[in-house]
Image (cartoon, rainbow, N blue to C red; front, side, top):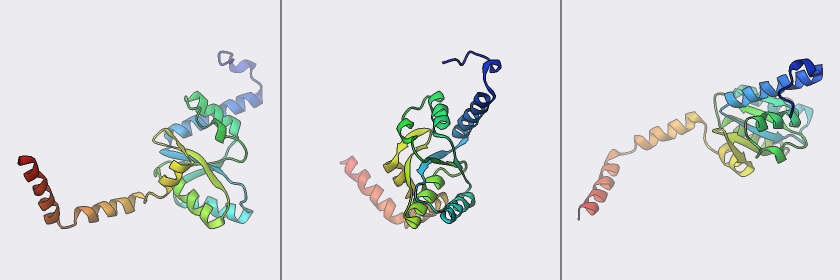
Length: 172
């Protein structure tokens, strides 16, 4: 690799590619998560709707070159994504909500009966299609917090009784 060579030897198009790779690396590092989507089968109208849905959920959606995305990931030390980076690839980055990219993608895939999620990254770790699918089913933060609150405000007496029983067994 000729990383050592200075920009002076690079052609304008190589410099442009280099800049894109750096931008992608930054995006990956600043995102809570991302998913890679094979967007085959989408009509123009559906694509517009799909993009609007992402925007509403604070997800950045971009079609990027596989080679550049792969290079960015490789430079960050990830090679697990290499085989997914073939054919049509769109990238959805979750900046504030890690679940949103997978959730919006999965819902749109169901709705349009097109596309598929290839893989993604959650918590800076590679996630295959099945993990992305599982993540897409996790309720969003509000729902999660709501569920937690209802669990926590459930009759405390029941919990106290259960804990007591456990304590008594231990005491015997």
